[in-house]
Length: 442
Image (cartoon, helix red, strand yellow):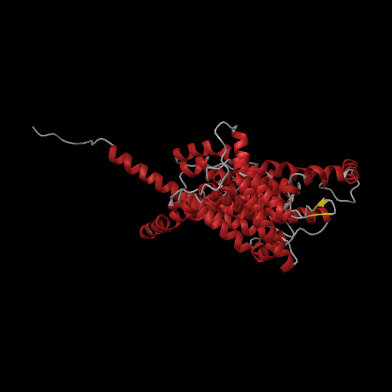
């Protein structure tokens, strides 16, 4: 057992840790993560409007309150949709600016200018203008991959031109704001002169503008990202990274966010059209079924620690149970500890994977309502799961089932860990006890 553990640690230290470290520090992964983080408040508020627009009642309900709410939402649907359309409906605006600003900051560029340049680059290819109107078709999740590509491209162009001193320099006496405006003139010209002709060429050759062509190419990948193997792989990577002491959730969510947002947009469009929701694996699924209490679904473990026979573990349980309600479990991860602890490795990795299978299977069978809203990741699991599914009851039941399963899986490993700690404590106490019964000879 010891040799197996040492081999596992060696693989983690020599292969997984360096790879995760490089990936986590990669400029583009950081920029994408920061872009989605910047857009998150607007998208959460926009998603919250869905509760008012599509109340969780049957259209045939006779309840007076439910009937009044439904009639109100139908009468004023256009007005209620405006905040949604100007937040979730144009999520790519916020994301492109956020990515451009973050990447620009990493290249020592002016973040405001790099963010605006990324925004212009996206509009140039994704918002065709005809008959006095700008098309909004690709401003939501359908254009999200285009927003990533154009933001990275435009910022790289800006950085390359500045690094090679291809810029307009004004005298020092000119105000800083004016100087920055002239500095970005050449990047604007280059981005326009490359992206616009490329978009026209793609449209002429394929009959599709760039975001449409990109989504067409990525369609198999987007579909694969919604499968059970994709869920299990992303969870496995997250858990292994975390076990090695690396923030695996940041890495995995940075990669998965574009797919989650595209799928969320499709689900919301289906909800508005009264059609079946097409996607299962969204951020709400990840946050509220796989990370109950934090990475590893450790909220049930926190409750078990409260009744532990080991004083140290009981103390960690008391410290960690309240933060775990809000999916913050660092006190347990580093206090128990779980990180680099072979006694808890198996449940730490397997618990969220089992929860994923349960929730995915229940959704496929039609027992579990699907995600249509974006929620803060700190929302307690049963509340957040219900909120994400437009306040359905089935997610609450699924969260309870997942918590019970998690507790049952953690319990035997925790008991074994307790026995090992108690044995170690007993040995230390015996070693430190003063010698008694010695006879002195004169």
